[in-house]
Length: 324
Length: 280
Image (tube, each protein chain N blue to C red):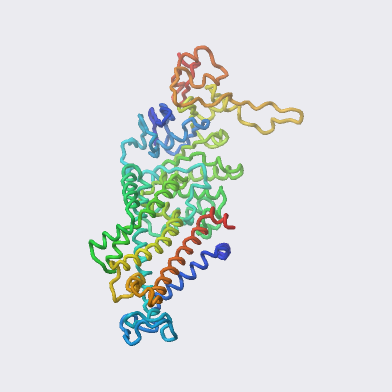
């Protein structure tokens, strides 16, 4: 069953220099309890897609068209009040920066307490007990003691765990994780990812994992969507994407990951980068957005904009090589 | 805790201002015990306009009342007016400033327009107009002064909200489905209380001055109740023949306002890390 289905979403930001097409016709599907990975460079529209789902696009941004079907209802048709009941309760979100995502003046128990008081009408005492229980679930040692701490008394990894505890405290059906491990160091990253996987099993929460870290995606995602310049360029099963990438962008991305053990005493092979930068989002081009950076570009690529072509039932690619 | 004590030690403004303020508050609380005479009833025309001496430390006024006692009792009026009216101003300012900064759009324009109008009318004139309309008296003073001075608090609150609401944890609170009221009062307000507290302390001082001015003009506290401004007003005619009549109430106003201003400045220095580091 599809818990989240985004159809032809277009989100734009209207600025003085024109309109930025941050998300340009994105469609994706997420099954209940699944982990869907969204990968892409900075500025590819990952975060804007997530914020669109949450209904948190602020002016000058605007969702221009498309559907966001959550459990069958289009979130775009809900009022702000109805949306607020869904946020935190049924769809929750955690952010990249654990250092600044917690209110510095509230004790941990009050932060988690506010959350359950908002959504579940628990009393102060009950919410405190619940908080300790949640801290235990996210594996924070001495939860009774730690609940009385302020955020500045905790490390980044612990704060991110507190964020996860808050986000999961109402047992949501979807957790949107916007680069949750980017600001953490590697060992803590592994712990946090492990924790998210465990909790996913326990609560059957679907996770929309947004990241530019392909390692994280390979570790946990089942389905992967690769985004570039506000569009989906490839989607499919995680093994398929990693073993047999179809879009030149995906394969370049995979080649640009540093690998351990490749370096030898005498020489080391040069790490491949993708030349150039993400194209600006203000103009809608008549040719492929990746044309100027693409290693496989042909003449045809400069004349025609590729469409998303379905390869099979759950994978698709946006490249002229696969068209026609 | 140890850290904050250290900080306070390095703040002469805060220590001196706090001490003066504490003394005034103590005076107001224990006026009955501290004053040697009753401020109104112990009038003895046989000793009218006596200069300062052992039995009347600050002398007596034209009706033979002890000025020291009247100054001590006067602190009650001054402090209660200063605190109550500034509290009203702060509450009005927070409600307007918080909602304007948070919701923005037409409401922000409206509130900002209103504050600009308030700031462009001299608050003294505004208070005078209200007092002339509703008549003199303590409660009316509360109303008049409690509605004239909120524009500063409102502006400061709004600017702080504009900064705070773009921080990550406010976005996180939104993403977790907190209601607007909850975000405003439990997430934003505690984080911006520092500057509001500072401007509030300074506001108490200016409210005390306003009350003294209004009483001086005869629109504030009515005789025979002792108020510093009112005492100055009646002492005006004997300024040269019996200067102690005006010196001591004037000194009381001066010291109180100075104390509160020092206290406010000191608070700003510890609450605002930027100005603190400059001092150190």
